[in-house]
Structure formats: structure tokens, C-alpha cells
Amino acid sequence: MKITDIQVLELAGPELPQAMRPAWAPGGEWQRWGGTIVKVYTDEGIVGLGSPGYSVSPMIEKWIKPQLIGQDPFALERHARIFRNAGAAWGVEIALWDIIGKACGQPVYKLWGGYRERMPAYASCIEVRAPQQRAEDVARVRSAGWRAAKLRIHDWTLKADIAQIEAVRRTVGDEFTLLVDANQAQLPGTLQPEAGPIWSYERALHTARELERLGVYWLEEPLGRYDFDNLARLAAAADILIAGGENNVGLHEYRWLIERDCYDVLQPEAMVGETMSQIRKACAYAEMHHKLCAPHHGGGGLGFVAHLHLCAAIPNCPFVEVFHDPPGFSSDIFQWYLAEPIRTDAVDGCMPLPQKPGLGVELDEDKIRHYATAH
Image (cartoon, rainbow, N blue to C red; front, side):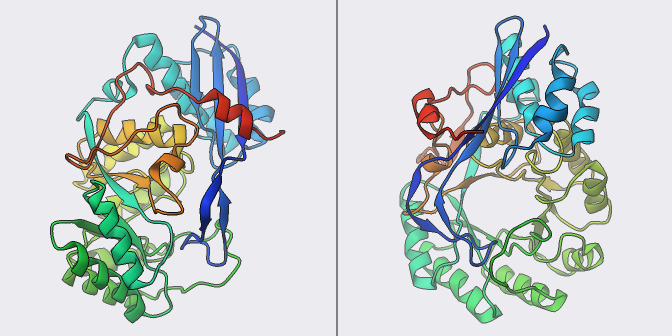
């Protein structure tokens, strides 16, 4: 089998029911939720679906496509050099795994080890909201069948941050799993129209201890991306799990994070940090060091589904992350261009893994044609 062509689509996406203001980009606002899709064609008629990243990189046409055409889609370790040279569009490789799964007649997660067929999911909130409002929001999420949710804390004071978590805990009780994300490792790279709070080690430690008191499962990105010394100090000093790594790039950085004990939970992202084949190595390395690994969400649609397969394939992953922050943003919107979005089962709060070969999902071609942008 040989690769014959690669096509990329950039999608404007539907308007959101209401504008969303992501906590990690103070002053920013989402009016729509778009996406990117890559289709990799082969001489045997199998078409692989993937998502190249959070935007379309010019390196796909300039470098990746010329290098991959005529190549065997199964030769992933050989192709790793191509993606590292590009330093971008890591998610194109997801389409190669889709081809491999379809050629083998197996869903990708089974090719990767098939640890489970249902994956515990958490609703990942997007905004910082007032304590009572957020408590009501999470109560509705719980009523819809979710068993876990991640809250954003990005206020200027510790008191204001903890007030939100306290209000939610009082409302949902102790049986509902809460996770918290401080989004302190976003720079450089994240556009922030307004200045946001930057935590010191002391702020992170005090926050971690308050969250321990409230029974929070993990504290995510509490310090700068490369503040390795203080991250290690914090992980040693706090009983709560410290999570992060979604913005780190390359196996060498994952190695640093693991070996220096910066995080208890590694969160690699195959749209940002490396190809999916290499991210799997980071997950295994975390397991070897008795650490959890909860890969970042993959940006929705095909990227998310690929990360769902990865989460289900490895034994050290506790949850899959799903953007879900009604009323402005739902898990269906997160996956809007899929013909059938994967939904959390209200019975156990888990997402079932697709059982068809490859990624196991199909595109809503009508929606894609409607929202495709000129490129």
C-alpha cells in the first residue's frame, strides 16, 4: 500500500449558542468552533482521516505531503523524522493510524493494546464563572450523567479561586470527582489579549493545599511550563496530584518532566507535542515511572477521537477530557463535524469506544461542505 495524496480542509465551524471566554486566554472570546481535517488517500482505496492540528500549517503542503506521497503508511517510525523536521502538523499521522486500523479490520485502540472498551470521561469547563453559577452548571452536568468535571481557576486572588471550588463541592457532594486547572503553563504560544494572574510557587502551594481540603483529584498546570525546579518542589510538597504537559513539545521534554518528578499526571497532546506514535512512548515511560498519563483532549472531532483511543489503550490513564461547558458549549459541539458524536453514558459516566475499524467514526460531509473555508 502506498500513499497517493493528502488533502486538508480548514473549517469555520458553527456559531456557538453564546460567546465563550476561555480562562487560559484572558480577554479572548470564541464566537464559533471550527476545526481542521486531513484526508490521506492510498492506492488501495483506503482513506485515512485525521486532524493536522489547531490550524493548518503551511508545512503540510511544503514538506509533509511531498515527503509522504509514495510511502507506506505503516512505516510510522520512519515517518517520525518527517514530522520532526516540520515541527508542526503532528496530527496528520493520526490519519495513517486510521488507514492501518481499516487495513487490519480493527479499531485503533485494540491495535494499541485495548486496555478497556469504555473510558471514564470528565466534562472540561472552559470559562471561569461566579461560584453559584458554576455550582448550578456542574449540578446540571451531574444530572446529565457525568461523574467528573474540571473547573478553571484564573482569578487574581486565592480566595476568589477557592470560593468557586467550595461552592461546587457543597452542591455536588463528595461522590462527584472534581479536577482543577490553573492554566499557568500556556505561555509562550497562547494569545492573551489581556494580562492574567501569574502564580508564584507560594500561590501554587497554598492553592494545592486548599484543593486537597476540598477533595479535588488533581491540580493542573499550576506553574510555568519550564519551571521544572518549582514544579518538582510542588509535587513533592503537595498530597494532591499535580498534572500538566499539554504544551510541552518532544520526547525529550516529556522525559525531563517524568524523570525530574515535575508531574504526577503527564498530559501529552498529539496535536501539539509529537505524533501519536511518539506520544504513546511518553505514556509508556510515565507508566514505567509509576505515573498516571491523561493525554490532552486533541482539539475536538477527529483529534479528540484519536486521543480517546489512546486513553482506552493504556493502563495508566484515569480519564478522557471532553470540552463540555453548557449552555455555550457542549460535547456535541466539540465533535460537531462527526456524523455521530460520541456521548457519555449516563449509566456509568463513561464513553464507549468506537468498534469499527480505524478511528471508527465518519464525517458529516454536508456540514463540512457548508463550513469549509477557502484555503
